[in-house]
Amino acid sequence: MSQSDTFFDYKHIWHPYTSMINPIPCYTVMSAKGVYLKLKNGKNIIDGMSSWWSAIHGYNHPILNKSLKKQIKKMSHVMFGGITHPPAIALCQKLISLTPNKLDCVFLSDSGSVAIEVAIKMLIQYWQSLGQKRKLFLTIRNGYHGDTFAAISVSDPKNSFHKIYHNLLPKNLFADAPISSFHKDWNTSDITSFKKIIEENAPKIAGVILEPIVQGVGGMNFYHPTYLKKIKNLCKYYSIPLIFDEIATGFGRTGKMFAFEHANVVPDILCLGKSITGGTITLAATLTSRNIADTISKSETNCFMHGPTYMGNPLACAAANANIKILNTNQWKTQVPNIEKQLLKKLLPLINHPYVIDVRVLGAIGVIECSRLINIFLIQKFFVKNGVWIRPFKKLIYILPPYIITNRELNKLTNVILEAFNHHALFI
Ligand SMILES: *Cc1c(COP(=O)(O)O)cnc(C)c1O
Image (cartoon, rainbow, N blue to C red; front, side, top):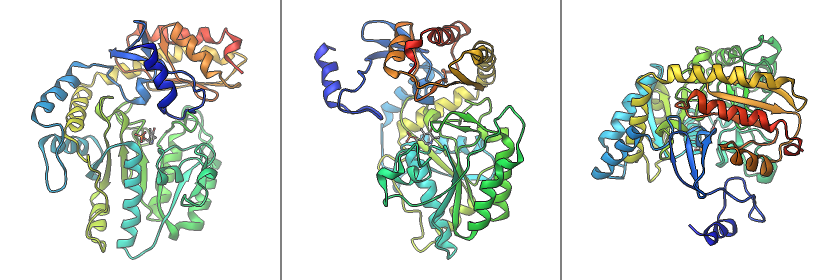
């Protein structure tokens, strides 16, 4: 790894949401173990992001590695058209048993955005089967569902810059996002906007899609479970299928296996991704009810029209099976509440800082909402210098560490955040 390699990266390689003209230079990671990322200069830094919600058990996990090695000796991949294999069967059995009874059929795909495309296409075909041309989707503002076209079309219009893709995106319906937060009182008026839109458009709506409880990239808000209950009731009343996007929140992150369990409601379609393979390989799943699957299969095509080349990739399925095996030891049920307790204790006092508007914690997620924009370049430098990896956006500093983080490591992570607030230059 030479200086010219990093220069090559800087010059030629696109990184997520990054300009090709003078981008903020990337840090080179050579390896990772437990909660640590090892940088090119030999320094180990604590990953506060779990590689964007995915590495829940930490890096280089022996059980995950073993499952991958064992599978690679058998086969890395085989087509899923007309062929099946034990890792996919085992995974789908596990996913069906982890989720509510209603969710009975599994469609495997390669990424979260694709799992959303699949859910949306499924409902369009579902309604066609029933002889209706429904194509509108109802969602809430501040949502995020991925970067492909159908996914953008149901993500927040401002955050996902709908105007850039003007005329290419289906025009969907957006209700106001709930204001009542998870830990505060329920405010009845929160549902007004959603209720009005569904009442006025019900016969045209193919489905409702949202992130249950936690709105991720759209602002890291934790909303009131009653909102989800009300939405479920309205969907039920109008017979409109409900899609939950648990791509970020699934597999224990919020303190429940799935965030919708906080509200005790069950969706008709569930999208999973990110941590499904414990942060090792890309994989996603769309689970549906038997009724939806069967109805789609009665459409004029007799089948659902989708089939990614790497569908059901055996390596990814093996990793996902190992991830669920680790989760089934139930250690996460003590790890996540421990992290929550410590985050509350360490981060809540920041609420008194003049640059802080709100501090919120749910499960193993800690969020500090600032009154000022954050200088990402400088704060990242500051974090790395102090031995932690945190990637804030806009006015938000948030962390979602691997569940295996120790009290001492978490202490270091939160101490560096507290220290950042003593440096005015890191804020704009
Ligand atoms: C990350 C994310 C997606 C998109 O998943 P990709 O694997 O990045 O395509 C969709 N929905 C939510 C809630 C996410 O957090």
